[in-house]
Image 1 (cartoon, rainbow, N blue to C red):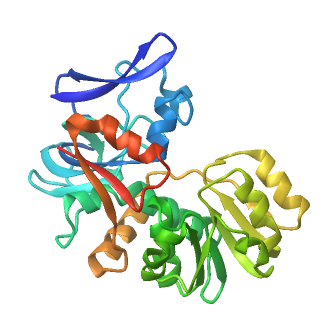
Image 2 (tube, one colour):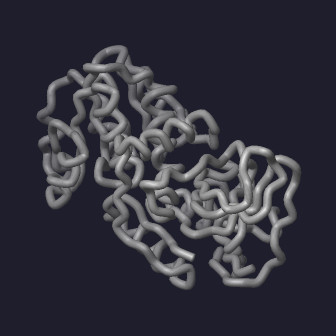
Length: 311
């Protein structure tokens, strides 16, 4: 099968196309013929030696990727049969290996793809939607009528977070550039703020939750807007203790978060897709041969929704 491995060229990691044997299945796994791969910022961070790379650097071969949608071709599980269309977040935060034509997947990391959803849409949903859902529901405990500020609301995680928060009854404010204002409002946000202006600093200190997908000075700009006892979740900062300390100093909770593959949460995401509660936005679809183009699009920092690689 064709696959893309991470190869070292001196001190630089590079994507390299290669041929590999089909993965061997363990009990409780299925072999999925990959139809589409979702590309995420963590892919680039890991390629560049950050992100999850320290956990994976001794893997040989090291295959990036965690999001996929495809068709089961072999099964060593009673959960799925050959021919089932499935999608999921594979082995995150471990070795997902979805940059390949075939992927051995634990069945606990997969759910059936809703029939009203394309492989492209499904592949772009799992990691980003799970990040939004787990951070808002499990971590922040978002409740109806709470006020939430979502940064980078037009991006991969952000556009799902707006839809989920709206569905759960929150009052949603989303930030993005002015050109993406209408898109953010179309997702269900009641209010839009252009992050390039100083309008953020004019907001009242009445947000219960801030979900940040940007990091850096966005954290400092957000803390004054959160109520005492409110919650700040910064996804790019991961388990950065500095964010937690800064938040605590200002009387709010700075919560650490890393998304994880979870069967129950994936079933909820699949149900949201089936019912039209979640509508993935795909900004670009590229061929498997053009993986570098997909990475370049993510690196630009201006992706609306998701970038997908098709096989």
